[in-house]
Amino acid sequence: MQEVMSENALRDLNTIPGSEKKNESSSKGSFTKPYIGTATENLEEFQKKNSVSLVSPPMNGNETANTVLETGIPEVEYIESENLNDLEDVDTSLKTLLAGLESKDWVLVCEALNNVRRISIFHKDAMLDMLGDVILLVVKSLKNPRSAVCKTAIMTSADIFNAYNDHIIDSLDPMLLQLLLKSSQDKRFVCEAAERALVAMTNWISPVLLLPKLQPYLKHKNPRIRAKTSTCFCRSVPRLGVDGIKSYGIDKLIQIAASQLSDQLPESREAARILLLELQTVYEKFHDLTPTVSEHPDIGSWENFCQSKLSPLSAQAVLRVTNIAREGLVLGS
Image (cartoon, rainbow, N blue to C red; front, side, top):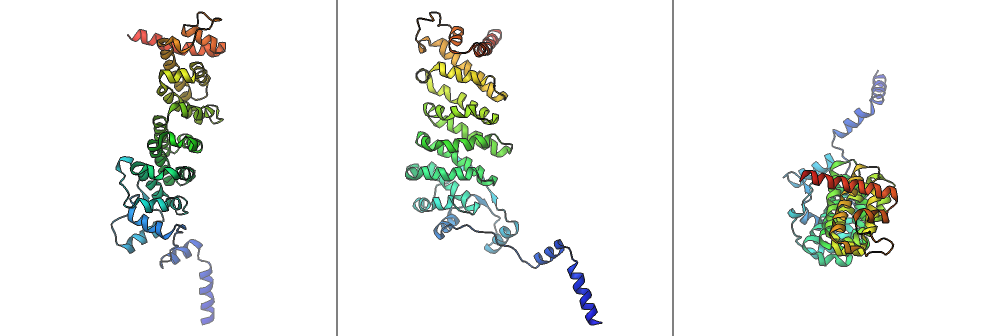
């Protein structure tokens, strides 16, 4: 009888659903310890001292550890630039910075990214020699599928633009592409952060250097990327000033803007319209931007200038946009 009961109990145990077995095991306190990346001991010690990017409840050490083990997802705080504090030990931070950015532990990566931001704000000269390597690793974080890492990297990009201006121009291309991609995606809080970073880029990098970097993306196969690029291009051109527009070539700028008037997305077309109105204002105030050519003695007017530089269809589209805007100003006055 005892053997029969043992066999029945064993049979009952074998028929328990997997989820119930799992619950039974977990109720005994069997947790899987999260993987910790291969950062150096110095890095981990330094991050403990300077970490302000993670929010944990005010518990003792054991309770905090259990919280992280049970949830597995620490809460990340996105710190605005003006709220970042200076580092306690800049030298140690610089020595451990690349290791932190390369860590397999995403929490350490976020902390390292915030340290890049602090150094950019408070000690930018100290990171100048390693800036190229830092930017490559920031770009790696921009590609990270974890939103917390991606958004922190986007905020880091904005602070780098603010601090280093034209010094980053040789390393800009991969960062620019990622920011255009992130600003074009559907995840709103990432998209908005990327758009702010692109604004910082157009504000802090010289347009004469930035415009050639933007121009290839105006023909990108992704219409959203074309639209975001058009907006950046439109925002950057006025910063050239009259002399800069003259050097860059107002005819070249008009041709670029005209090509965007027929683009797929309204955002591209609106950016092109704003840019054309800006160029029209500049042209009509300063005729000497374009020397008079003997073959076109009447080139002084905006209409004739457009017709001489654009195809008939493009010139018609440009003139329709600029004339409608002018008529609206006259009616509103």
